[in-house]
Amino acid sequence: MELAVKNLGVIAEARIPFGDGLNALTGETGAGKTMVVEALHLLLGAKPDPGRVRSGESEAVVEGLFVVGDDEWVLRRVVPAEGRSKAYLNGALSTSAELSQLGEGLLELHGQHASQALLQPHRQRDALDRYAKVDRNELVAARRELRELEEHFAALGGDERTRAREIDLLTYQLAEIDAVEPTEGEEDSLEGEEERLAGALEHRRAGLAASDALSSDGAALDTVAASLAKIASRRPYEEIDARLRSLHAELTDAAAELRDLAERIEPDEQRLAQVRSRRQSLMDLRRKYGSSIGEVLDFATEARDRLAALSSHGETLQAAGQELERVRGRLGEVGAAIGLARRAAAEDLADAVAEGLRSLALPSSRVVVEVSDTPDAPAAGESVQFLLATNPGTEVGPLSRVASGGELSRVMLSLRLVLSGGPPTMVFDEIDAGIGGEAATAVGRALADLARDRQVLVVTHLPQVAAFADHQVGVTKEVVGATTHTTAMPLQERERVIELSRMLSGSPDSAIARQHAEELLATAAGRRTQGAS
Image 1 (cartoon, rainbow, N blue to C red):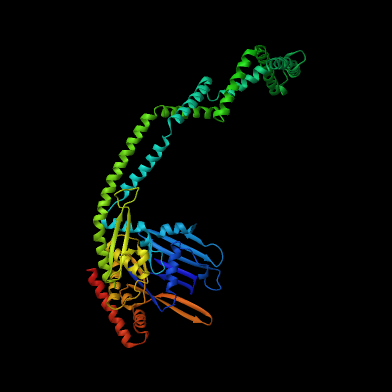
Image 2 (cartoon, rainbow, N blue to C red):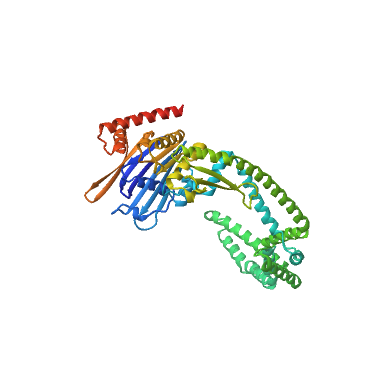
C-alpha cells in the first residue's frame, strides 16, 4: 500500500510507501500519526470532518494505492473545507459507500477511535465460522428458497369466496373476448373496407369521371394522338415520338382500368353495417382489456392461466405446502449441522484467543464465544457474540462494552493469529496502550508473526514494538513561525537507530541509548528469524 495525504490536519503534504511485512509508524506525541490513521479511515468511507482541513486551504486530499495480486486499486477522497466530500475509485467518481465496500476487503483498521470490525455481529460469526471451517452458503441458499416459497404460498392464499368471485369475473371476461374472436391486424383491413363501402357511390362516380377525362372526345387521349400526328415520321422527333406513343398506351390502359374498377363498385349497406358492428366490438374489447388487439389477446392468455390456477387451487396449494415443508426440513438439517459445528468450536476458539491475550499483556483475560439461535434459522447458531473480561473477578461482557480500544486491538491481533484469512493490509493503532517491557516485546513479536503473509501497519510509542518492524516510518513535526508542518518519511537503518534512541530515552544523541537501540533491533531480528523457522 502507498498513501498520499495533502492538507489534512498538520500534514501539508506527505507520500508514504509502506513496504511488505510489518511497518511501524513512530514519532513524538502530537506529531501527526493520528492524521495518517484518519486518512486511512477516509479511504474506507468514514464521515469526514471539514474541520480537519489544514488551516488556510480549500480542501484535503487522501489517496491510497492498493495492490492485490495482479489487481491495482486507487482510492481517493477529497474533503472540502465547505460542502460535500467526493470519493473516487480508479479515477472515476464514486461514493463513500462504494469505497467502504471495496475497502473492507483491502484494509482492516483497529484502534482507539476506529469503527472496529470485530464489534459487528456478523464479523464475530464469520470469525467462528472460519475457525470451525463452516460454509454458510447452503444455509443461506436454503433460507432464500424458503422465503421465496413462503411468499408464493401466501400469494396462493385467500378465502373460497374471494377465489369464487375472481373465477366468475375471469370466466365472464374470457367469454366476452371469445365471443368476438379477435385477430391481430384485422382492424386495419376493416377500416379500409368501411371507408370503401361508406363512399361507394362517390367512388363509382369519381372513377367514371376520371375515365371520361382521359378517353372522351377532345380529352387527354385525343390531345396526345393529335400531337403524335404532327411529328409522325420526322427524324428530329423520333425520341419524343416514342415517348408520346408510350404515354398514349399508358393513358389508354389507365382509362380502361378506371372504368372497370368504377363499374365493379356497388353499394352494400348490409356489409357496411356488419363491418361497423365488428369494429365497434373490437373497440369495446380494447376499451376494457388493452390499448391494442395484441394486448387484448395477451390479457386473455394471462386470464386463462390464472383461471386454470384458481380452478386447480387445491392441488396447487397442496403441492406448494409439500415443497415448503421439504425446504424447511432441509433448512433444519443444514442449520443443525452448522450449529453443532459452531458450538463444538466455540470453546476452543475462546481458549485460543484468551491464550493469545495472556501473552499480549492481558494475563487475566477470559473469553467466551456465545452461540445462540435466531428465529429464521433454528438450531443453526446464527447469533455469535464474543464476550471478554480482562480483570480478575469481573463478569464477561460484550466487546463493545468492556474492551478499550487498545484491548480490542489486542483481541483482534490474537484472533488473527489464531485464524487464517483476512484482508491484505491491517492497521493497529493504540495496541500498546498501557503496556511495556516483556509485554511490549510479546506484542511486537505477535505483530511480526501476523505480518508474515500480509502487510501490517502499527502506530506505536514503544521501541520494543517498533524494533520488530520490517520497515519504519518516522513522523516529525516542525513549527515555522505560526505554521506547523508534519512530514512522514521511511527510515533507513541508521535513522531507525536514532529514532529508537529517542523512543527509549528521549535523547536521540545518547550513545548508551543508541547502543540499546541497536541491541533491540538485533534481538528483534533474531526472534523474527526464530519465529519464521
